[in-house]
Length: 254
Ligand SMILES: [Zn+2]
Image 1 (cartoon, rainbow, N blue to C red):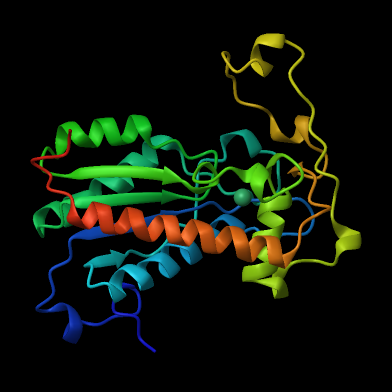
Image 2: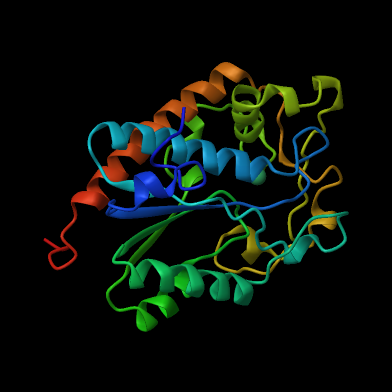
């Protein structure tokens, strides 16, 4: 079944008289995820959320179009990890400038960046694009922040953790190695206290803080947890798509 809200699948026959309200761009990364998850984990996740939510919004008559996922993210801290791919933030700005130029020219003034990778930071980029394209309304969301993870998962983590392993067990179990291959995701912290109090930041050299590339124990991951989390994210994302489609860009505040 061709999905008319997925640009990579639809066709000129459907699009020649179409006018979309909202474009959604999933943005992931290609990087090691502990021993057991695929390098494309962030892409599979981001794209699956967005496509599932767009299906619901489309069914409600909302004009949302999902753009093809950008598969590379910022991985400057993982330069010594084999085949972790890196796009510099300045390259992300260049890519987005070109994409936004197309949308702006064709009258799709709402763009949501749906981020699947913690190393991508779109805030400075969105600020800069806002000056260049005053008619565009660009927002971004990073999915692990959409829900309280502790209500779904036992262990904390932020990379190839219980959440990501559960999601992949639900979405693509064929790509997850058996449990005896899962690393513990043990994480080393900075010795300087201020980093761990959250008011000081420096990039972590990933290979020095994790021996298996994971951060967070995946041990208690299950497909059922992944399904529950996936469905709740999708519900919330559909609400966001609808709100963005309905928003009057001249009347955004109350
Ligand atoms: Zn990930």
